[in-house]
Image 1: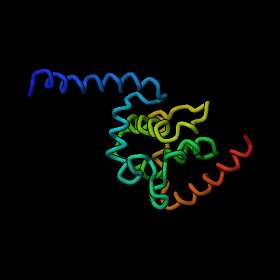
Image 2: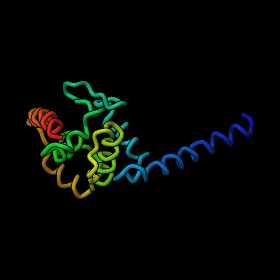
Image 3: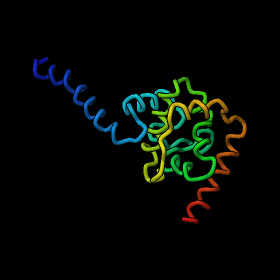
Image 4: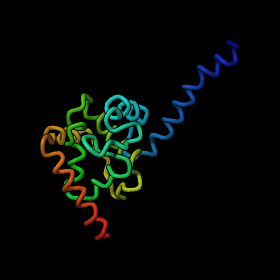
Amino acid sequence: MKPGRLALLIALPLVAGVAVKADEAAIPGVHDAYQARTDYQLKCQGCHRPDGSGDDHSNPPMKGIVARFLGVPGGREFIGRVPGVATVDLPDDRLANLVNWTIYRFDPAHVPQDFRPYTAEEIGRLRQNPLRLERAATRARLVAGFAKTHSEQ
């Protein structure tokens, strides 16, 4: 391999890392976008798919919908209590980072203007009471509230 190409291969990750770091400040509540993306790839995309489209059955889509939960009563809590969030093997700070990244990554159009990013403390509190069998019914009730909330605006 030519020395110039080797230098480029070594420098490329550094340049990419700088781009990710610069982008991190633009996402409220996300202190490490690279870590959030990696955690999503390792912990979430197997069920919710790389693009967040899910399957509409056991692994609901996040794309174009996840931030809408923030606009209905109980929706914010729901996000922190769904089984995949509440029981994932990540510490609370990384999970808050991941949840905030997920909201902005998959549904930026529906993020409320007054959105307060999740904190590690809030995620820790919410995940102590995970949804189990009531998850589907709770989700259906909240999704039904989307239309009501939208019609009132």
